[in-house]
Length: 77
Image (cartoon, rainbow, N blue to C red; front, side, top):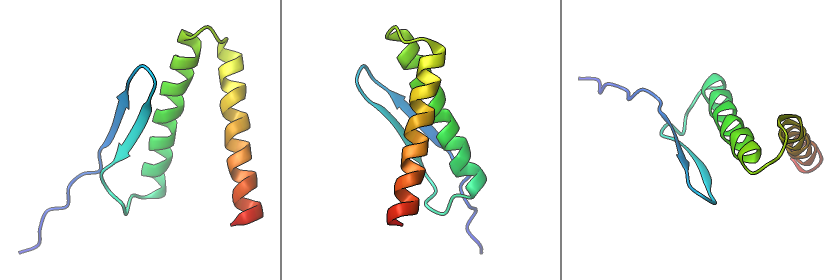
């Protein structure tokens, strides 16, 4: 009998200092990985705003971070 595949779950843990995202499927699809990324970005924006940053400032910080990650990937593979 074929074993039933567990549905992919995205679990976000949010503490005073740490934000973590756990994806229970190492073979997740691109769509699932993008959804995980969006969940994390959402939590980060909320946390930055709660700490006094403007929404625009939080979004710009995350945009910069993503652009840097992409640049590093392109340069270093």
